[in-house]
Image (cartoon, rainbow, N blue to C red; front, top):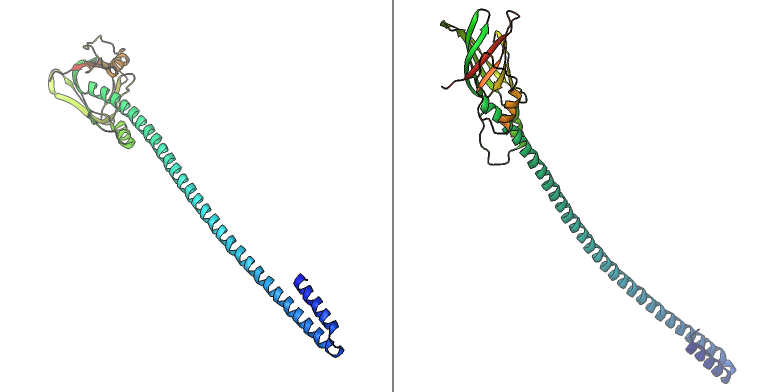
Amino acid sequence: MDFKLLIGMVSVLALTACVKPDNKEQVAERARIEGQEQAEAQFQKQMSEKDALVERAREEGKAQAEEEMKVQIANQAQLVERARVEGRAQAEEELRIQNGSLSSKAGKMEQDLQRRQMFYTAASGTYEGSIRTEQGDFNIRVTLISNLPAYPVDRVRQLEEITSDINNVYFNAQIVQWSPENNLSAVGCRVNNVRPDLINGVITIASTECPNLYILKISNARATASTSGAGSKSVAKQIYSGKVKSVSSLVGEVRPTTNASVYELFANRSRN
């Protein structure tokens, strides 16, 4: 009980003791009512102060929560931005590595295509010579034309472009043979898509349109009846190293489909 309230009650009791007997009950009732009113007022004051404290605490808690939320949002935004920047940097680095890898691969493929083109360029041309048979020698003319001449490239090409060139470079060949005594006796054929053995320097021409199978070896020396084509692999290496720019001759074999004979062939590059 509040100390002031206790003093008031004591005062009332003392006053009651001094009054007349018939007024004691009125005084006591008045004191009780006043004490109750004072207690109720004090309680209301406490409750009011309590509500104010609760409201203040609520407002402060709300403000603190909002401030913490703002901090969390700011931190989250920073994390998102950091992740975005790091992700972009990582993607750019991966793209740079990928582009570097593709560029390196494209460079190697261009070198491979260039080596192939060196062979096709060196071997392209017209060769004239003879085929030695039991019935005597026959004249022969072999013409080799690359379907995809080499051309300069001043840019990094797509892999698909380079791959297409590698897969589609070949010789178109024409072979004509005739008796030296009669030019009108000539027979021949044309064969497309002739792909040589680039390592061993061997060009094989076979087609249903040709009555014969031709196995030709490149040479950098003038061909004669006694010339061997065993050095064709060496000539191919010299082409790739740049030492040989043009094939001088073709030597090899002719294998007819009408008999089991194998005829020797030699032909030198024509000056025309």
